[in-house]
Amino acid sequence: MRIALIGYGSVGQAFARLLERQRRRFPFRITAIQTRQRTAYDPHGLPLEPAWGPPVPVGEFLDRAAPEVVIEITSLNPVDGEPAISHIRAAFARSLPVITANKGPIAHAYTALRAEAAARHILFRFESTVMDGSPVFNLVRNNLPGVTIEGISGVLNSTTKVVLAEMAQGRSLAEGIARAQRIGIAEADPSYDIDGWDSAAKTAALANVLMDANVTPQSVQRTGIGALTPEAVRRAAAEGTVLALVSRVRREADGALTLTTQPERLARHDLLANVDGTSNVLLLHTDLMGTQGIVSVSPGVEQTAYGLFADLVDIAQQL
Image 1 (tube, rainbow, N blue to C red):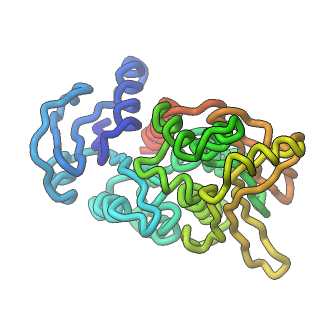
Image 2: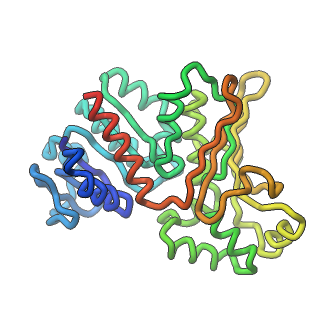
């Protein structure tokens, strides 16, 4: 199967390495890559470090690449989800199935994109947009038939967990951000993490897909951790609680949804407080199966890359 990548940062490179390791079992090959500054093509498969040429408009790139599937993995834009939404629509216009790890399109335009894919009878997958490739959307779609998701709770942003842990040791917010950047988990613009935009985008994406919300990150009542001080974090710990940036979606009695992302003091026995380091936890509150939990333990780009791979195998099996 010929694959075109739009974006080739750390996730794209980890995905390329994963395909190299799995080639005997899964004969996928990356035949084209486009970034903001360069492109590369080879119908026989590109090496991990290809020979680059100048960039071209995405439509021209797709026409020349002639892929069988497109993987969109550009950086998050939490304001409007562009240009990733336009990249996906360019692929749809050519009747190409799409996989994305970019939460922006799912947070801003999922309902419309789902309808466009269905109208063209093409597949659209996005497992890596939340929880670093751990099965969330695939779990619900494939293993929870008839279940209604009534609410969502989660600690979904690794950077803020690392920053708050550093602050609990008396270090500053800036020192915590620097550590998150050193270990490679911060967004390209770390303010997206600190100000809660990454978590708000994930909250909107989860609500859109699992609760048919049709919202955007701007619909989320959002407070980041930027105003917290090391003293406040240490005081919370001394009082037997844990400070975390928590995302919640709640269905009200009238059917409306309330979406929040904000720092919360959690009891130490709370499930949301009991994942260390970069690990994340998501709780799905359902009508038929009670509360189901998904934990991503110390995730990195390899797990995000695997989410792309799992979606690719899913698409390949259905084509």
